[in-house]
Image 1 (cartoon, rainbow, N blue to C red):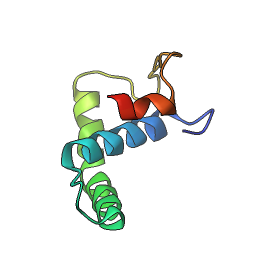
Image 2: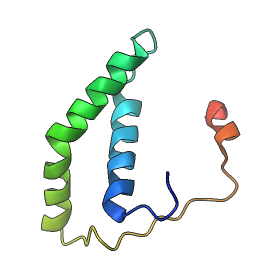
Image 3: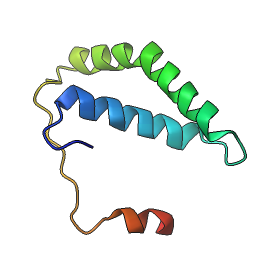
Length: 78
């Protein structure tokens, strides 16, 4: 994630990451799965944002707290 990214950019990344984690096929083609995640992002992200707005979330003022003790090296241990 790029330092200084907008709230919506961060949300897009989180949405895509979640989608991939829920739909990943370990024996599937990585490029196809990434392409599918991008297609789903384009087709469904606006609806997700609208639902956040309907719930009165301010999508321009989101703050994420990332624990400092988690690093990329920790990913394989989950």
